[in-house]
Figure (cartoon, rainbow, N blue to C red):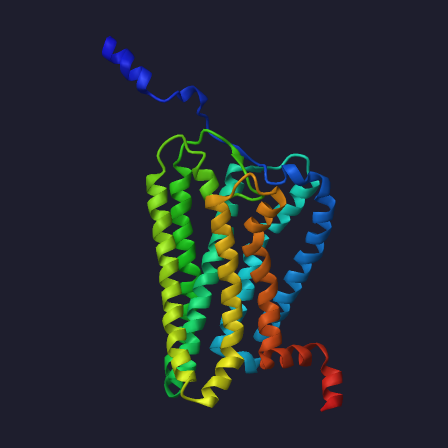
Amino acid sequence: MGNIETENMMQPPLENVSSVLVFTLSGLNETLENRFVFFSLTALFYPLMVLCNVVIIFTIISQRTLHEPMYVFICNLSINALYGTAGFFPKFMYDLLSENHIVSYAGCMIQIFVIYSFALCEISTLTVMAYDRYVAICRPLEYHSIMTSQRVLECILFSWLAPFSCMSVLIVLTTRLTLCGSTIEKVYCEIWAVAKLSCFSTTVNNVFGYIVIFVCFGHGLMIYCSYFQLIRKCLKSVEVRRKFMQTCMPHLLSLFNVATAMFFDVLYSRYGSKNIPQGVRNFMAMEFLLLPTILNPFIYGVNLTTIRQEVLRLFFKKQVRISE
């Protein structure tokens, strides 16, 4: 009997453990007095972001001259931007006008899946774009034999299926956790924040999370190797240097944009302090959803002459014809 009582005393107090049906998002609690300002800014930003990316997608699909691998990958970035932001902005705008910031358990898992598969797809797409630029500039005579339609399709499938597979496993590992809380200190559902609510060990989740991070570093290594070869080639030829500035600089700007945004999100997730104003913390948490999705269309639309000319021709046909 004494041993049984000792074992019972060592068991965790299960009476406080219940199945979580809804989560409370506390990221807006300290900024409610400015919620109408934030809603107005978001109501301007989100449609603008959608419009810019839709213009890029429609232009690339409708113009046969843009049916090249580089432009197909840019189109994929814009499609991914629409996909990822759809998992965040509608709910965020609703919360700005609502008194209760709650989300169902299923809705939280879906939001986690969409937002983080979007982030991983962004990295994967930028990786295949770096490979494409390497082949185009360092092996130009072999470019069309290497970057065939089938190879481009394989790259697109890789950029989507790899993130979906990783996030599916992470979601399954998360749903098996028994949670002792339901408050997420963020403006959206985040997988690390949900894992921290677990009553028991999250070792398996952490290990797989580090595997995903390691894979992302592998993508980064591939990008580094591609650009190392590109820069070596640029030092030997003025023509290659000109082509590099025209087609690679937009990619580098986009890559820097995404890397910076991801870096801020990791800092916030791991080391975010409550001493930092909540508005700053919210911006750090949302930056990877804000900056890449709106800046990428401008980066590629302004810097790539071909896209810029096709957009102008598409929307100002009469004026272009007159000038011609």
